[in-house]
Length: 117
Image (tube, rainbow, N blue to C red; front, side, top):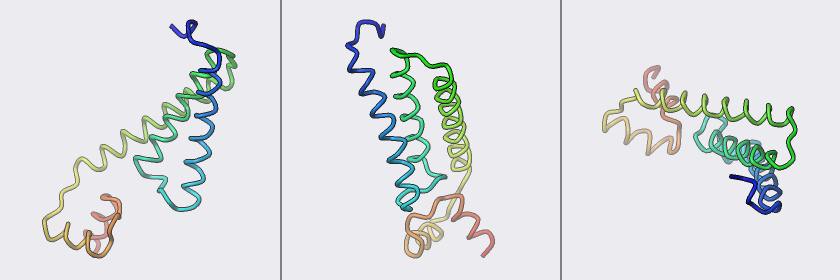
């Protein structure tokens, strides 16, 4: 399937993967995104996938193993986020309070705050 694609596709796939890795880490360090967010896990999943695609033209076992495990860890993180968020329930008063005071607070943290407060 991949053998019919021109070589530049694999090169640019790798470049895009590296850009996603670096961009997501920079956004994390700049506190633009949280490490426990869907966007961070998705960016890392996409980055690893693009780098793995690029390795299909110039294979390197060590790099491929890193990307496969990075994909598995990202999928595990996404599954954990879905599981944590699926069971949370908020009353209309809770939602209004969270929106008014905390804005974009993650749902699990908001639930913990309300339960402890």
